[in-house]
Length: 129
Image 1 (tube, rainbow, N blue to C red):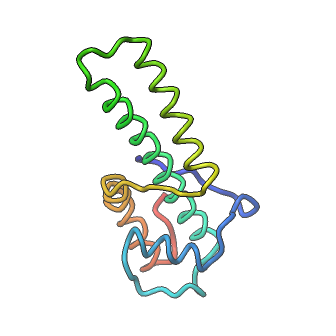
Image 2: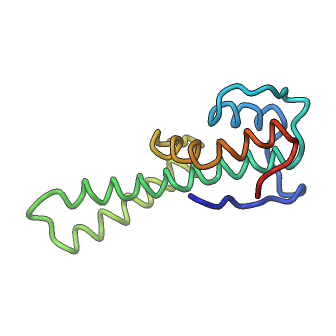
């Protein structure tokens, strides 16, 4: 979680209001309004959310693997089947119902890693990266 994907203007799928909500979710309130947000800000917010969803999804799979392997009598075959079931369930949950879980540890790590980047942007109008 050290480097965020960068999006071009035509790859942005969130609007200024959604970007504002995402940035507020990660960093709390700053002295900037939604009207002041640029396409670069929208890209930054979108990248934060993509990273949060991807990392949380990975953690969910690891959690599922841990739960499925906790039994001392678990065979490799049943473990493999459980991983496949967990992946399908996770895909179905995240891809079909649009229900996304973002783990607090993921949110906190992203906030810690990128708070100075956002604070610098708010103060200067530029990004550090």
